[in-house]
Image 1 (cartoon, rainbow, N blue to C red):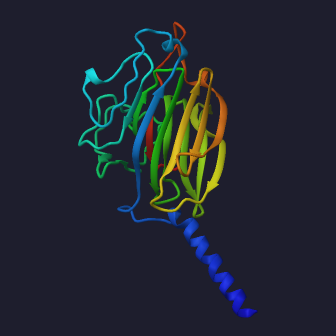
Image 2 (image 1 turned 45 degrees about the vertical axis):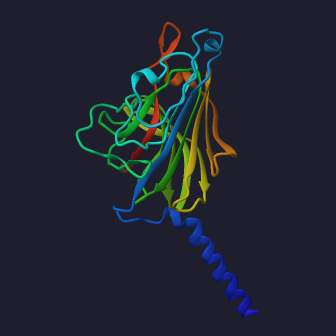
Length: 261
């Protein structure tokens, strides 16, 4: 009986190590946020009835003539080139190199800068061009400490944004959805949803944002097939600047930070 109990304890300890292996503290050289690909698919009903409707799919670096600027279309970037495609944007001008394109992935550093500051965070985004869209990415997340986070950010400005991210809390990986509110004149995070997950180091987590006219949904997946909704029905108007009824100014993309918030 004692031998059986001993083996059971050892087995449980092994399972715990496997479950938490992706969230143990790493050396700075090992910590990284690696985005394997990014897909944006726009599918507005208005464009479906438009004779100029265009569906385009492309990867890596493209020329202007290969990318549709109107209608329904999709982009798929697998980061296989040696420079970013022209459609990617930063928040303000980078004054240091905090990203790398290597081994068919986009690597972002965990810099001590937040998107809630008027600085240049580690964010690379694509402009939202549809009221109905799906944006998806695959992320290998290896944090170096409890403040490291990475994920998909929907950004209008420092006080209007939604963030679907990953972080580590007491060796347990967590996925969450946040928005920013202003308190005491300062932008601060408001946690809308959180879920503990047990994916192992080296296995990607899939993150997705869905825009459906007036609402937005945020989902995660282990295999890019079965999706779990973390938050749904969030107000899309929170990210909109009204200009003749259109939604402009919002960027959706990949983000990483090591700043305590």
